[in-house]
Length: 334
Image (cartoon, helix red, strand yellow):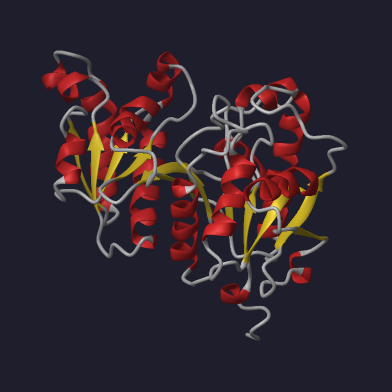
């Protein structure tokens, strides 16, 4: 394989996120904070990114590129592959169809580049679900867009920080729907991807703890039968496949045990069961990794923060951590 075609020489792509949120700001901030680590491009709107960059550093500028191959990384210029053409800056901190369309276009362009082998992987800045809906795009979040565009593959959301890794059985749906969707096939997808995701992060034999759905993991059937009827058989099947899975463990203690290094990854049954303990530990180092895709995708573990967008105070730490995870997962340094 030639150097030009090696994945290790390809750039990462960072999408700008919703242009009305903090996405463009934290992307610009990361670029300025890491002058020695700039082998990446932005997929987004050149007007939006130029404004965000100039607000942080009046001397800095962007370069419009049509393909990743046109990017240069040695002159301090931010390479922007234009996925949209805003004629004016979208209103900051407000939901708009224009922002939803621009954010969606950046995601689709980055996916196309990733699937075509033009980039090493993608890091996505936050999008706003209401802006997508205003644009007629009814997706609960990035994960569903990515799964659809990757051909409907089985995916799972892994949330990670320095202490724990969490994979969700169900993601963006009501609690009523989550209980219905947490069936045997969904358990197997989550457990298998948790095992594979932990291995991709360098854990040779991951210890996978599966959380129960009900309080006290059902308390022997007193609080529900989902554990005995669905989760226990899934764990047994996973173990027969060579996965070191255990449980079901009570949801109110399993994350503490994972933090104490008894487990390497926790499979949580629904969104808040898994994300509350992780986010309580802080957003700065939290990362969202989409497992099951044919390419690497990571994201900061926070939203668009419309309340502080445009004030120049947004913290880029989580985006930078997501960037570092993307490098780690692709086995190379920028």
